[in-house]
Length: 214
Ligand SMILES: [Zn+2]
Image (cartoon, rainbow, N blue to C red; front, side, top):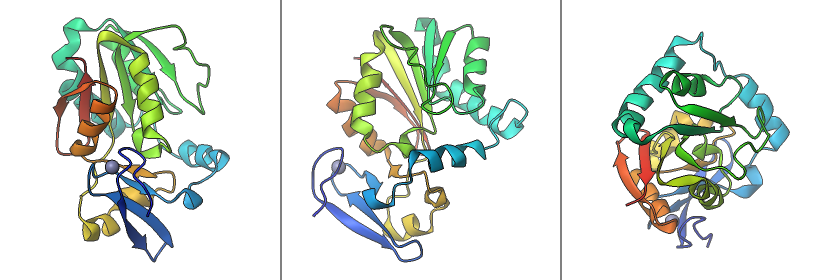
């Protein structure tokens, strides 16, 4: 039995014969993760990201971030002056929009801006969009992000929530991207938040949640 990477409980295997992939579903926290043997290497991963059309010229992409800002950040705006966009990608669109909001914004990306600019700093806001689905060890990343938050800081996360039923999951387009290896529901984020002594301040049913202090 494979233990859940987040809560250590037993998981159930979901086998996808088309790709010969095993996924593990946790009944306790609803986390789903791809078998280690199928995770793509970092150089392949970077190549895959470079194909993404992530720029200010892509209107759909910009619009997606505007909605994210309205939903997840606007309600907390008065308490934010500094921000970190963690996992900014090849064209730092969200960071640009955050700067337009008046936040002093740093960016970090494992592949495209690898300098650890966040070292010895704390932020009022950390954003991670389209990051959590790539994580091999979500708990380790969450612990890092928590350590970079100011006391009243918030962590705004966007990752598409999985359908939480096996048939739906097998048909789900989001896992066709070979670099997507970890999938969540709002319940998973409840569990993750409690692990690092944060609370879920807001969550929708689609792809967004905000974690913060009490
Ligand atoms: Zn679990």
